[in-house]
Amino acid sequence: MKDTALHLRHLVKPGQKLHLKDVDPGDTAPYKHKDEVQELLADDKRDLVELQELLYAEGKHSVLVVLQAMDTAGKDATIQHVLSGVNPQGCPVTSFKVPTAEEIAHDYLWRVHQAVPGKRMLGVFNRSHYEDVLVVRVHNLVPKDVWSQRYAQINAFEKHLTENGVTILKFFLHISKDEQKKRLQARLDDPQKHWKFAVGDLKERALWDQYMEAYEDALNHTSTPWAPWYLIPANRKWYRNLTVARVIVETLRGFKMKWPEPADDLSGVVIED
Image (tube, helix red, strand yellow):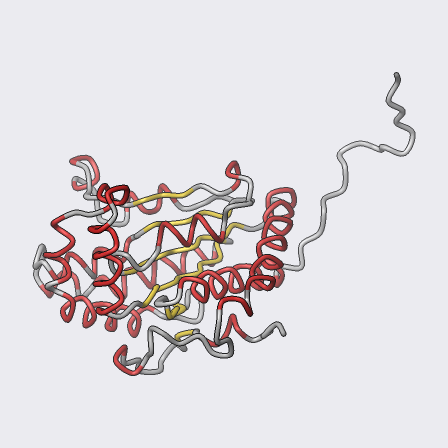
């Protein structure tokens, strides 16, 4: 049975204090096994394909999906599994790596604003402007009096976007430290996955507690009425995929979009042999 409220279950309510230690990364309620959701996920993915085509055709809305997570939590896999059927022409994906020299010469939101999807687009950020209150904070790349001001700056930036027609969906894919160890070990054990393994990942893993503190503060400071966060339990990949898909589908459905009328009168058009 489809849980019609699933897209609200993991919403980080603005103004309410969240503690990550109280959130189970293995939560899959109301489902117990992936076999229960295979058909539901397939239905959501079919709906998403149709809704994305309608989004593109109508041309009135733009949607920005932000994915943040610790290594191995499944940002790439979420994009692959949830958005596998959509038209890539209307679904640009942007990955934010270490800033270039040109990007460093501008404010930290400069490169982000350029990548915001325009009308009719369903855009995805694989990592995002939130790196500037996460990795920058954990690695002390800028002082606290600099990164701590960025919460308000990000909120203002996202409000500006939403006031100009961009709907923002932010997902934190939450896995446990034990689950991350299993996934890293799986990469190490499989020669075909060695390319995914970087020794630097272990250095980041050693900073787990600092990252959890940074994520918790980011979620609490920047889950707003106009751009709320969704805290997605991600230990079970099937539940992660289902929940992200459901949030996107229900958001698009809420636009109540309509197919546009043709530019010309087609009633008398005949296609000759």
